[in-house]
Each structure stands twice: as C-alpha cells, then as structure tokens.
Length: 158
Ligand SMILES: [Zn+2]
Ligand SMILES: [Zn+2]
Image 1 (cartoon, rainbow, N blue to C red):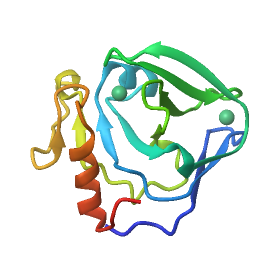
Image 2: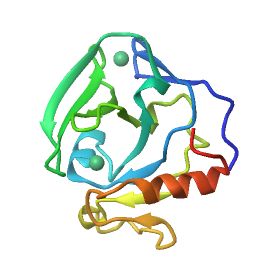
Image 3: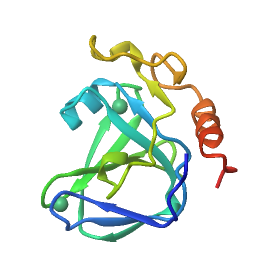
Image 4: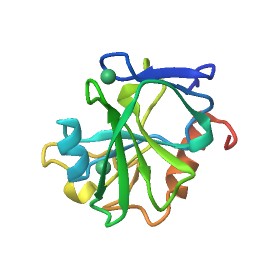
C-alpha cells in the first residue's frame, strides 16, 4: 500500500471546517459500535487514530458533544458547527490521540482498514474478513492494529 505524500487535507461537508493531516495515522480500522452506526448512519465508521500534534485544524468552529462511549470511556465528539459533519473524537482518557473519521478526508483511497473493532455489535449482514485484526469490543490495546498498519504500509511508526 502506497501512502500519499503528507500532508493531506480533509474537512466537513460545507467546507467551513478544514484540517491537515501532517503524517501517516497510527492505524485505520472499522468500528462497528452502536455509536458509530448511529452517528454515521451506516453499518460502521472508519476510525483513524492520529497523534494530536499531527492534526492541524485549519479553519471553522467545532461543536462538541461529550458522551460516555460504548466502551464506558468519556469521549468528546467534534462536529462542524454549521453543517454538523462529524470530523473526529477526542478520547478524554487519551489526550494525545485524536480519532479522525476517515470519511472526512478529501481522498481516502489509501486508507485501507486493517481490522475491525466491536464486531460483537456488527450488523448481521456484514462479513468480517478473518485475516484482519478483529476484536469483539473495545481493544484493551490498539498495538495489534498499529502493528498491522505499519506492516501494510511498510513504514516505521511516525
Ligand atoms: Zn461544515
Ligand atoms: Zn465506534
């Protein structure tokens, strides 16, 4: 898998919020939790953990919705204040991480998911590739997902 030349950019539907991703994320995987199903309106959302200092918020005001996630941990979900597009989550327990919603990238052709989390709550008609890194609920550690991404992209951890 060839990574793009970073930085790459993304933003919300109306274009008010724009951001720049300065380096490769730590991983890319599908989240099948009920929160992601509700907020995305789809069967899963594509989650992309990035180090906070690799994500540059360029423009637009964010609205926050703080909640307790299915994992029991507090998260701050962040949206464009104008079009309400879902951009990223900030896990309150891990301030060094931002969980970017990959669909907000201008191009996500390179963002190939290496695994699935919360497969216990996946939709019945979704098939999970057993060759990927799959976890029934919230991962106790994201290291296996990070390692699979590093292996796929052939790059050392940024
Ligand atoms: Zn917007
Ligand atoms: Zn989720």
